Amino acid sequence: MLDRNHPPVSHPIAGFDLIAPRELTFKNGLKVFIFDAGEQDVVRMEWIFDHVFTQTENTLLHTCACEMLLEGTATHTSKQIAETVDFYGAFLVPQVEADRSTLSLFSLNKHLSQLLPLVREVLTGAVFPDQELTTYIRNNKQKLQVSLQKNSVVARRLFHAAVFGENRYGISAEISDYDHINSNDLRSLFKEQYQPYNCTLLLSGRVTDALITQVEQLFGDEWVPSAPQLEPQPGLVFPSESAGALLLEERQDALQSALRLGYRSISRSHPEFPGLQVVNTLLGGYFGSRLMTNIREDKGYTYSIGSGLVSLKYGAFFTIATEVGTAVTAATLSEIEKEILRLKTELVSEEELSLVKNYLMGSMLGSLENVFSHADKFKNAYFSGLGLGYYSYYDDVIRRIDAEEVCRLANSYLDYDRLTKIVVGKM
Image (cartoon, rainbow, N blue to C red; front, side, top):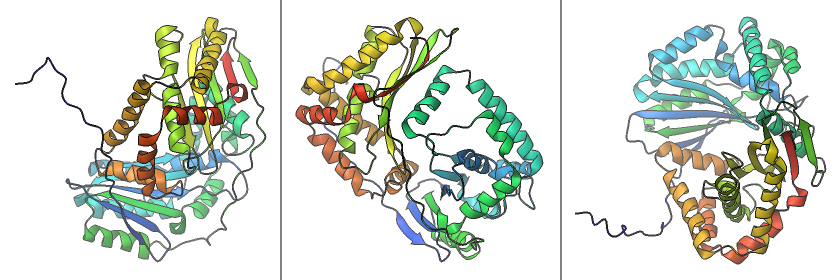
């Protein structure tokens, strides 16, 4: 019988084992990573393309191209594509991020012979029909118009512009930008970017030898590059940040102010990134963080506040975000400053540090719930130029970090006076 007078015995997390993929490269240059560990007859396939910028930093063009991949080919309309995918109970999902675009297929193995030729047709022959493009532009202009009424959205856009400047990380789409999108430009980008040598394919789930053979035929032998491979692109050049700049966009009718603070920081490939993640978690990286305890629970200024580290292909940034009542905007900034100063001047207690360590290790272990999760962890490392050994290093850093190291890292990477501070609402 369960003894409720005593808590159950707990044990420290003793590391975790990650599934290492099998790696192939097809003759057309397509890189393939295979995670064969599924117990059910289901598979997830992800075609991941690095963004290609040949003439302009028009990130909106990449967004439109990805989101319109399923709007038609020479032989299938958007309706036919959607009906076919639905008929087989599958999901075919395009997703665009800052550096890459992905087309993901979730399907039962028994239906792949019907679905994979359709995916190959999409990746080699999307046509971006004018009628669908007109509808897409109209709908997205309306969505953006609504979004720009939200203080949090405006604050995020201003933050990225201030931190990254006039490049793909700093430029946000304006409503008028949609008027310059046309099918010819989309087809031109599609031809340059959606090529096998610019693609990484991840297969996860129950991946049989027969499936690998089928994939190699469709996406190796029969996917012939239709454009020459471009030269590697140089990294981005960022402007000098305005140290400590406070940018206020005042809105007279605002009931809340949206706050965004931050600056450029180190990326996942930096050796001190795992340690800085501990510092970030203490500050605002989980529900029990100091920012949440102070500004939500103690002061009652906000429903939610958090901080984060974001790693990109050509850079990274640290950010703090929240929305507060306009009457306490200045007070919230003052409390954020106090919490950063505390991390830099006071040693964290062993109890609090142990809690954060357990949270980070537990979150990592809890996120490895299935083979798809293992593939996701691999992606995070691979696209940062790292191998799976990164997670052993991460585990070791989390276990060994102490209060003195937390204080050192806070002094090295946290500086309230240097943070770009965006306020949309009222001071």
